[in-house]
Image (cartoon, rainbow, N blue to C red; front, side, top):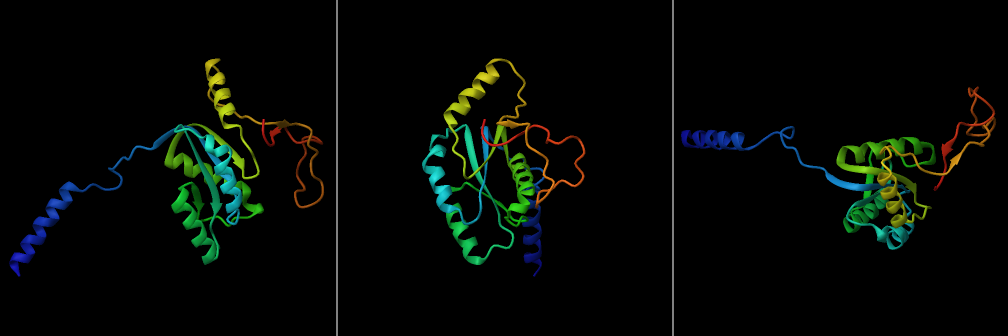
Length: 191
């Protein structure tokens, strides 16, 4: 009995001196020039496959894409399908506290950006949807030109619309908008 206690004590001291807490372990984050968040829905596997075979096939080692999917309240079959896809491609970004719906798009974008910020390092972030085709090689060349000009790294890029009328009816009506008859310019779609 005493031998077991002594052995257990020795093992404890060896392990406690060799192990570190998770706060002490600093695993370096992967670093990418361009991180890409692609908003998609749980059942859009064919669309994701098409993207992987087309414009995402141009990705270099300096780019990394993630398909963001809210997984709250998914049924078992959807979960199994997504986990199978993830084991094959390793490019799904599961958002477990988000129910995937049109009404949660803003939360989806914010949670996706936060996850990427926490998990990887990147110089630029492209947020797009799964109905978008990106000329990735051209975008990377344009980023090179942007940097070569010595311009600031901060970049908000897209097609800017300053002529959108404020919604006064319907599900997106703005009941407290009082600046003018138009929304302030904002990026819509590709640039």
